[in-house]
Image (cartoon, rainbow, N blue to C red; front, side):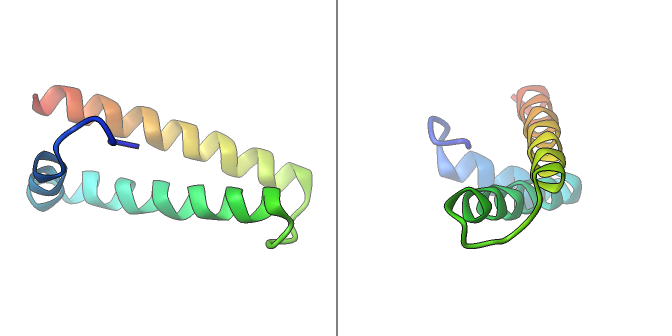
Length: 71
């Protein structure tokens, strides 16, 4: 998600901000689950998949806000 930003900045923010770290790992977890569901590896219903996508987007937006505020 933060491919364009220096990894050192992301790691520093993760160390300094526990909420950012928690959200970062939650986003990674949701991203993997959504990918697995779309590939058919993780059998879930459409409603659950849609909810996971909404949560993933909300998490991403919050992370980006926190990153922008820190810089």
